[in-house]
Image 1: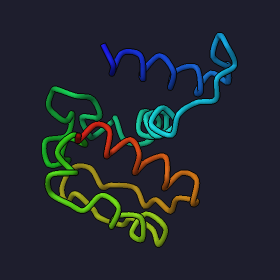
Image 2: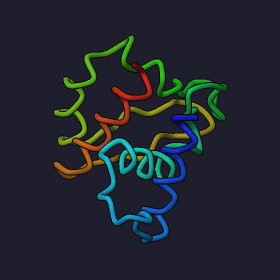
Image 3: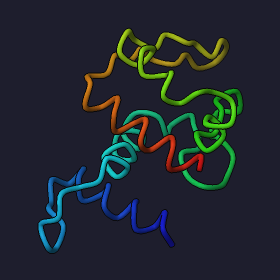
Length: 111
């Protein structure tokens, strides 16, 4: 249920809508909106399921494998990890607000 609420909030962000009571979006919801737009083609971004592209790890597993806070530097410098083969991961360089939102989402989904 918690994930469904977050998805609805993120959908509203993507559509440019405000919440019913004009409550500011949470960092987790903004992070989800980012991963929906940029990562879901290859990675499983929700609490379950397999990644559409098998070599791409599900985001819910990243907090168990990495110090998520430690990924901030990689996000700022630009992620250039490629999944060799059929699909290549696009290069990303995030701004500080996007990094904060993405880390908040990764901590939330992995927690």
